[in-house]
Length: 118
Image 1: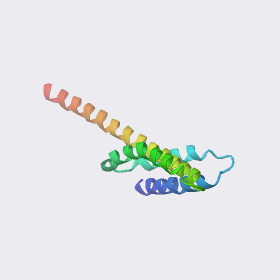
Image 2 (image 1 turned 30 degrees about the vertical axis):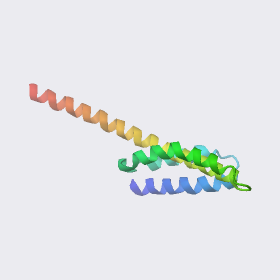
Image 3 (image 1 turned 45 degrees about the vertical axis):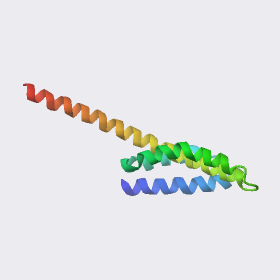
Image 4 (image 1 turned 90 degrees about the horizontal axis):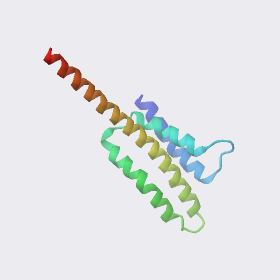
């Protein structure tokens, strides 16, 4: 699963850059990048989760700042917007995984506590 996750993350980044320069006909590139980000986040390390959440906040600001660069600013803004979609997908996966871990921990705690009473 880690290989698939890594490939999805790499494809999300490559597609984010390509879609920043070239419109891909009949494909919603942002949606594809988001889905690749979700897949990429499935096996991502929880240790880097805070950095990923921060990326979701910082990437749009960086893109907006770079949008004033003559000739390429619009492309850079689009690329950073696409990277934000990938980071948001990865963050969503990391959040869901963390919530599942919390619920499973709570359920295990309840079942362990129930056994000691009986």
